[in-house]
Image 1 (tube, rainbow, N blue to C red):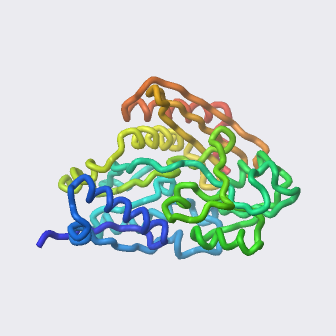
Image 2: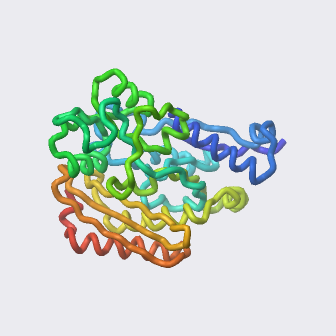
Length: 314
């Protein structure tokens, strides 16, 4: 009997939904039936530090890498064969021996305002209670509406939606991709245009991390890799790598490919209170992975020169 592929994932409903998307993609490219997919794969939930500690902001705990650390350790101990990540939660530097060569077709990268009393940040009532655990979202919200009252909020999608529905908070922001993957009702969710509200680097992208030495699995994962999504998130992650901001530095970036094949990039860095903002843009012809990384690197260097290193060492 063939040994199933052990697929590590966080145990949240969204993480499990994303893992099922990976298995569905593999079944499609490999011609597996539903029963064959079930026999050839095994989901291995791994509880991460980011999941265990919910009473403090991520920035105070060391950043989003807390959602990847235990999964990567399980990979290195050969307890799992690959790990499925929300790529926006992945550090830009991987542990030695691990590779991230598989990026699924990216879902809508935008943030959505979840609010029953307004359809945009601009139309929220003065002093409205805006809840988020993201320094990036907080800073961009305050940049638009400095009068809003920011409240801390952690937890899974259902927990955050419930806070708005109950009236405990007036509004929050969630990733459109997460709402879609969980098939959540969108009656109170309003997608924000990237032209006014930039997403987190690699938001909406699912990445599959594996051991570099596992060449057999590499072939399977290559079959579900989306080259365009891979180029775009490679550019964004190169941008973030250069800035190397602390987990308390709000940084956002979004690369997209036009119908004509051109690559467009917008990035920004803000002070946590939203009062100071630096923006950078890039445009280039169709590029390969190396060129994408170079574009992101150059954009990061420009922003770093303008803001100064101290800006990113809060």
